[in-house]
Image (cartoon, rainbow, N blue to C red):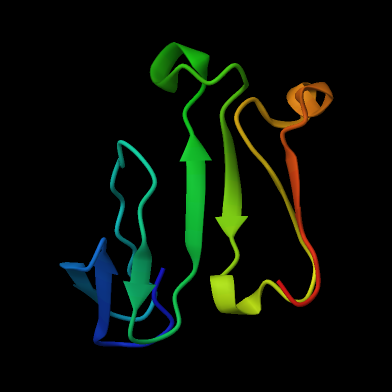
Length: 97
């Protein structure tokens, strides 16, 4: 969702949309992608649930934090989510990384 009029949105370095304040752009991505904008945007990642995208989970939405705002320490959970912590899927990005 764009915070300002005339916001240019790129996905994997290709122009995807020009948005005005309050507008949003929705796309299904097949894999990891880079999302960039020339003005402030709010990005959310959605899982549609196991019957749609194969994720072993209920549908959910998570807000994506900008890389440059991660701070000095950050944690991320990969693959199966919270239920798979026993698999060692929890990553830590320590200060000074």
